[in-house]
Image (cartoon, rainbow, N blue to C red; front, side):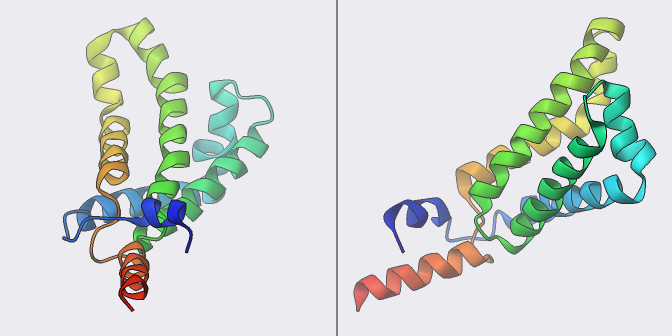
Amino acid sequence: MNKFIFKIIRTTNDNRSVIPRLIVGLVFLSEGIQKFLFSETAGAGRFARIGFPDPELWAVFVAFFEISCGILVLMGLLTRIAAIPLLLIMTTAIITTKIPILTEKGFWNMAHESRTDFAMTMLLIFLLIYGAGKLSADYRMNLMEWRSKIQ
């Protein structure tokens, strides 16, 4: 395994990331599926109301990343890489939906509406810093790499 991948999958030797991974993975997996199931409220219709050009394309694009990266985070496979597109999705969501609330209704309304976005962003940053943890595919791959260097 090349050194770059080895550095990316490096993770802590404890279980501190299990709950953040479950939260992030399940929320994004659920949100991605909902974009297909409830297109008008969570998918293309929502993207159209926000003002995205070609909302159907964007809904499928975002849903694909939410589902695939959510699964990767749940498995603890390439967790840091999977966190990056999810952080971009969160940043876009904050800019397109929460900043307008801030300018129209003020800080406290925005703070209330953005609590989930804030929590998910902080959990993604946590996963970027600490990695997937001991109960993950990243840890197992890291362990196999370490064992191969000893032999």
